[in-house]
Image (cartoon, rainbow, N blue to C red; front, side, top):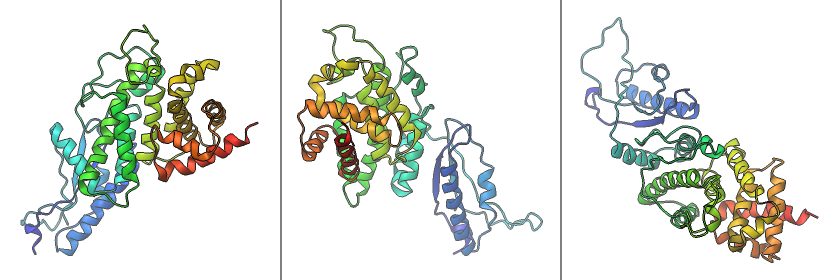
Length: 351
């Protein structure tokens, strides 16, 4: 079949940053384009250096570059002095709904782990996401630093309670235990991660470092302690990044968030267990996931020591009772079982 009649397209999306920091994604797209170029050569079409063309793509904030590695080639004969024509590269700005739908489909058909990691870093680490048009969202670094209360955060999803978020994260955790997912499940998995990430960021912005104003005021979530702490929303963010997005366990991102959880908990001092008396299982889970996030770090000792105190307060005597209490909040057997076993042994070694 002639190259001019080929209409099949192979697209790849890159969330780009102004500092060009997404090297992993660039490598993925480069290899994708090279494979498309080789296919084009087999069909008799022109071929040039795909990597050279990829290198020419400038990084711009707030946009997606759509790279086509196999597009229609005009039938006009190339000029002999110019040599082979480069692979066509299409760039366009998509409207918001289409961006979201196409992105979700790409997550299904391409390397899910790599792209989820890109989305996590785009959505959480100091910059607004590139795939949804929103009003400027205050960087989460400012949220964690507690500077100037945020009143105008625009979240492009309906608001949810913390209970709603927990239910969705539990569903996503069960998906991890399946051998394979159908397309509709994969789409739900990807879009729900995106939605809950935004909602948790909103909870952090509203609740972080905010003092309780009145006993009669409506709680910001189902947990009264969240009314003046962001510990739960931050800990769930850690869980999403480590367990669902599968970011490296030793990533500094987890440690940074856990550091602020530790700061919140330390403010209660000796009153920590008394403050969380009505939600000790939640406190147990928070200490568990933040201890996991501090693997091989000195801060881990603090969480392990507090874990032991909560275990004693809950009168947990066996490992089975321990994991049963953790499952009350959120649990993924493929990840949490091993980590809980390691922490249980560390608790046992404390004097």
